[in-house]
Length: 79
Image (cartoon, rainbow, N blue to C red):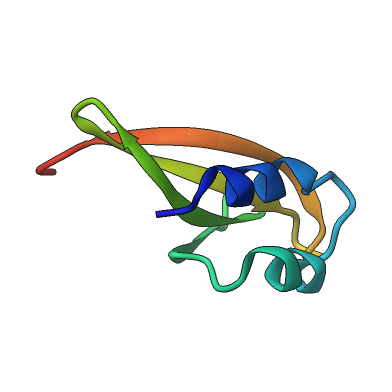
């Protein structure tokens, strides 16, 4: 799992960054999902779990491969 130090790295990602900049800072994402209807691609990395849920840091890219924002998501364990 990422350490506190790497969590600080996630906070450095800003809108306008390219896929290459993100990859250099954070390394390979856990998964990449494409949402055609939203014209968006989302990369995620696993964060330390909280209680009974897995936690992920997500970076959202537009069709040009530029960061439009970030988010966090949770998924109950065992699903």
